[in-house]
Image (cartoon, rainbow, N blue to C red):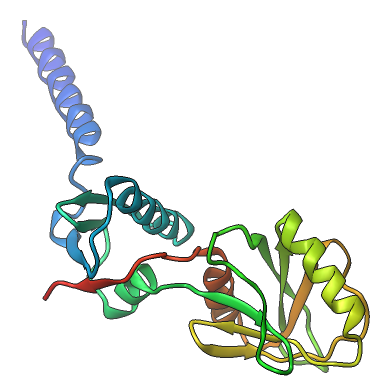
Length: 214
């Protein structure tokens, strides 16, 4: 009788433990969950608000964190689980993300205002003279690749600027036509900076202005 009761107790404990493990996924580190509210500065339709939510959710996915973005009454509620609130993370999620390529006269050649500019980006480690050196290979979308190829072919020997949120990130000299919309950004000093630039390229353009509710 004692052995039977012992077996029953052990089985019950195991079932309770298993149930607890299954339920834990729903409230991992509740104290590390935070939410922010972004208010629109213009009157947006439901479709436009959903479009903005999709951009922010894509950024959450790229950053490989657990979170959601949902629209309600001209606002976006962003909820992040499992990590502490930080100004750096909030800035990454809420930035406009405008990317443009300019010629030497400051004219825009291409931009990501319709989110059809960047297809993918990949980091490569390339040691140079015994020092750490990282390179970011960027692939443009098909239409952008054609326009980029035509521009580089006609402007060999001139510079092209890569601007992200009004900050110049690169100003290389065009030495040849860039085929297939694939180009590299070299001499990135460390992996952290390479990851930041990769994120900037992939995070899409947030087409509407929002303010962070305090």
